[in-house]
Length: 244
Image 1 (tube, rainbow, N blue to C red):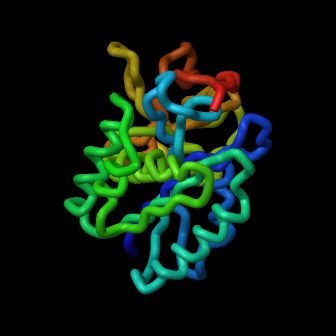
Image 2: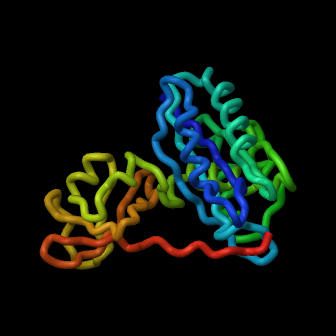
Image 3: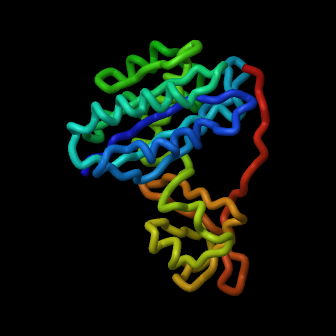
């Protein structure tokens, strides 16, 4: 199985019920037979008044396991149709597909890191994605910047949070460490004096389980609350608008 990274950006507007993250996650239903979604990762880019964005200037990347690289063309065509069908008026959608050995991603990784620190251009995105697929699908096409950055940051294995992994939304608010780890999630204590969480310990997710992408793994950082109970470090924040 080979990993293909599919980045989506800027597909919504201020009135949207379906943001870019949800649009990306819905692409799972369109994956060719034999392909499997490993996870969907949200990436946070630079928030700056010089950058037009909808709410938080984030983009999304799917990690898809593909049994045969020959399916790449089918994946690309379906992703293009998906983003063109589901993107909303007033958005500037972009799509990026990348594959290959880790070394091939270095320009995209560097570009992604740059997008968290400074204002970048479409020309820089196109240069970083040379050899891969990068396309704009409406408006200014500025979404190619975030789509390429999402792929680069996700491929680095050290940035972003999972918005889909092992049906994370199906877990109850309080779940055992063993249940999480049984689905491939790694529960890690962030307290300097705490022992490692035990399989029978419980984790309070506050109704918002979003593992971090660390070392190419989905990691759930927790702090102790006593009596075998832990709680996750973050919780859902309200969406705020920003003029486009």
